[in-house]
Image (cartoon, rainbow, N blue to C red; front, side, top):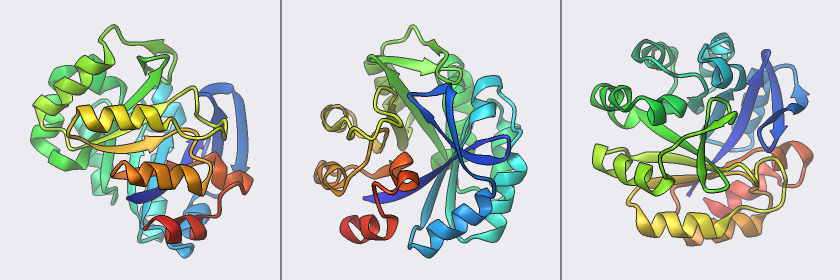
Amino acid sequence: MILLPAIDLYDGKVVRLTKGDYAQMTVYRDDPAAQAADFQAAGAKWLHTVDLEGAKDGTTPNFPVIAAICKKTDLKVEIGGGIRSLDTIQKYLDAGVSRVILGTAAVTDPKFLERALDRFGSQAAVGVDLKDGAIAIKGWKETAPERAEDFFTRLCGLGVKTVICTDISKDGMLGGANVELYQTLSQQFPLDFIASGGVSSISDLQKLKALGLYGAILGKALYTGALDLKTALKEVE
């Protein structure tokens, strides 16, 4: 199981939200590239990034920050938030990003998702954010009418490889990951799941690893000191 420390970006800074609420935002650092370098120094190979402004309005205001991280570190970077065109995907890949995460557009524009997969293959992953069992879209401001189970089935049919699945109720709460959710999903669907939301202890990581999950994202727990990245990597990888 791979571990992906997370950098959420807003106004060029490293921030964290609580339960996806933009009104509950904490700024942790002004220099995201320096934060990424610290994660690499601790042993990380991958980095999960989200452009929170992009997630809301479909733009890429933090693109220069992502490009700087790719240039200044050897991390494999995945980016989500506001990626709603093939040109945007290409722009990120050209900047050195390893994998883009399609969220809202993957749900609302099936043809776009098909075109992205045809052109970029496994470099295009899908982000599925669940809110009380429904798929949240547009920066978690709305929910999609399609049932989550139907969407996962559709992703399998399209040949999607990697899915980043977030339980919004757990996000930023440090209350533990929703292990039951990931167990159910991994048993039902042949996808490489990356767990996101609430991962806050070595015990969480051990449980997720025991499910055979592909990866887990570490966010707020790293910034509050609840988890030490070096220790977590040693335990899991």
